[in-house]
Image (cartoon, rainbow, N blue to C red; front, side, top):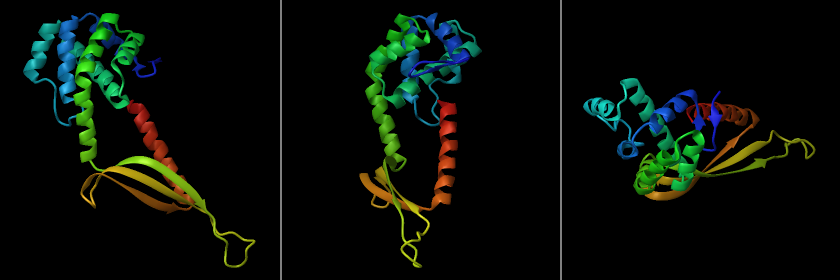
Length: 207
């Protein structure tokens, strides 16, 4: 059964990776982490070439499967830290709670402290380039009386306002903000909530 820290889900595969990472020289681990951070969040970019992967196996005394496990876990730690915007001290503490040694946790934290600002800036720029992002949600219920009499009510509807920030493609303005307002009846709102539940489940499965 997977264990939980406030930042990481410690699965069996993560535990296997932590054992391998704890056996690595901290200076070599530092180099690996820096390379992973250089391509984190960049689609289609690989941190190491095939030739470098073979060299890493020899350099770290790992076979191909073990190296994949280590790189996958390190990338997972870094991705979670980036999207939660974790401070270096918190990252070290969370990694140690997951089973990483104090020295290896501090190695992660030291690289993170030095490289995270540039990484987070790059991720924000990429996010803005991909279009507007959701910044706020507001809603209200609209109830209108039916024409046949004040005692009878027409079907109520929900007015949902989505506040968007980022690149507004209509105005071509970076950092522009605008609201998208939609009106939904009960059936439409339930359909939307069901789709959001599915999306949340898929995000949970990936986290």
